[in-house]
Length: 201
Image (spheres, rainbow, N blue to C red):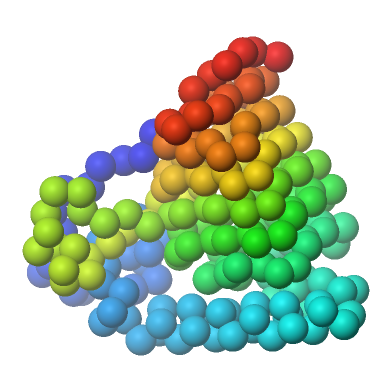
């Protein structure tokens, strides 16, 4: 389950490097972090260029995607267009996995996708959190990221959304249009918003 963070300790966080804050799931202000902004802008431009290349040469675009995402197994296939992968270095995809078009990843949290997964079109993986109750913190742009982990042999229908801090086990089927808000055990079929277990397999 996603952990709940208290109000940010601004004085303590000011002494901590930004990439440590992101890795540790600490609060940070994206709007005041030029290093993060540069990564997101660069990756966004790179993805849009790949989408254009794929119109005429799909294989060339896929090869360049593998160069952009260094932790993706050689046989992973992703269909274009891709909506965005904001932090390519934080995405890990194991062998045999297929991802359909309009794949979206936001933001800096680590994303791990296991072996032999099939992710349907419009899969959306979101790692950032903003404060649910403190509007002042939201106005100031404070956020933190939590990782998402997807096990082996998972199958997502179209337009599945996975929220921050969620771990999905092995051999999980997620119905189309589902919003996964909490951890899902292995060998289950889930669906709905929020996604809940329909049956065990």
